[in-house]
Length: 287
Image (tube, rainbow, N blue to C red):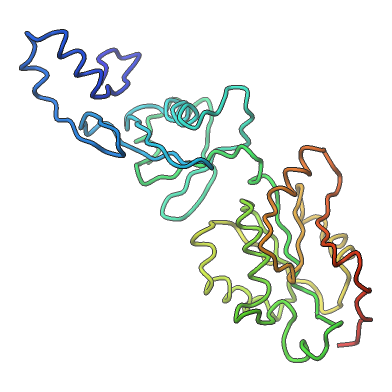
């Protein structure tokens, strides 16, 4: 470690070897250090220093931080390694411990707190939101009765229809989670809520993509999408990405959200060519 209190940055082995070469008379002092290779980078073995891993779209890279260093130092190092410029907008910082994600409180007080005091360890994942995905809400519509397909939905709710052995609604839920949205509202009829909760748990999607799911029960009356959103507008408090339970696609929704933000749009819709050219669906039937 650098002895200067204002610095306290860990030395890399290259620096130490250079110093040892400059001061051969201090050979005994430098021989006390043990060098090791980790993450293809050599660093001094020091119990006060942890080696973390920074990841972005271009891959991963090692990052050093001092356990007793401040949260501000850690954030600066993360931004340096990930090449996040001072002019780049950050929408929020999040931490994941044991698979549970919560907002990382970055204030004037916590920024000076040691990482150890905030229980930040080498097992803690720090997420830097540069896309505002964490600010968006996801809305998944699972309350429809499937009245245009009575032969299939006579004994089962539309959102639970199996597609390759998987309940239909899990496909659009996966799309929302892979987009990075962590606040998702699921509209469902009350009688089917326990079934959806059981299927979500069984799928283990939230273990891979931690998020907060809120089930909002609606009446038996089969309203259209616009009426449903109108009646429950108080539940949607931010920009939202709305998908229906029958959205089954491997298309990423991230470009759609990026376009929405880049153009400052009021509404952006994803429409397939077949939706434009094919005939209108059949009339609804009583259920």
